[in-house]
Length: 275
Image (cartoon, rainbow, N blue to C red; front, top):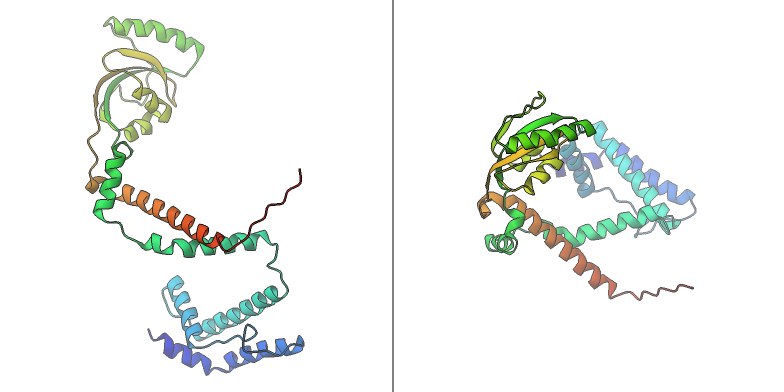
């Protein structure tokens, strides 16, 4: 797509000339002649091409002539209002403007860090430093008896049924769409069926004996851990995306901190408070 040709065609259009002339008239009527600095708005090939490219990025097609005319009209309007607002000092003491400018400065500071690609050695060093962070949760096999909603009555019955189970006798539960036995279930699998509270409670239980009652999102359970497989040592191949995300987050935070410290050196900050 020849954006330069499109821009040249636009600049030959009477409407474009009218818009530029209109901006000049606006300045003259305001009592200030335009100069060659911030008071001059130039719509050249680069500007028109950028506007067309932005339109293409949004709609995946080139703008029509009328659409390009509208884009240029909006661009001139934006520039006129923006520069007049600066001239009138409307950006001063405006918290919204301050926050936006801060975000822009921070974006500039971390642009390189966000685009950087870490080496395998750096990523592996992060894994070696904190393997528990990247290791998968252990897989758990367990039996469970569902007792119903978490009520005082069901908690009383839970003690009696727990005694039966520990004595090797059967104890019936309440019918529910839950498996009575899970084998090698991951933490995500367990949370999906029983909830996070139940999953966390399982981690504190020792294998081999019936225990409970354990609360879930559905109610109370008696549980026996039959096996727990320790998580394997994480490898870069399996956790690359997670560790790369951590690496980039750390790199961005460092770049932002260093940039701020460097800029701050050029300012004399005085905090004057009265007690």
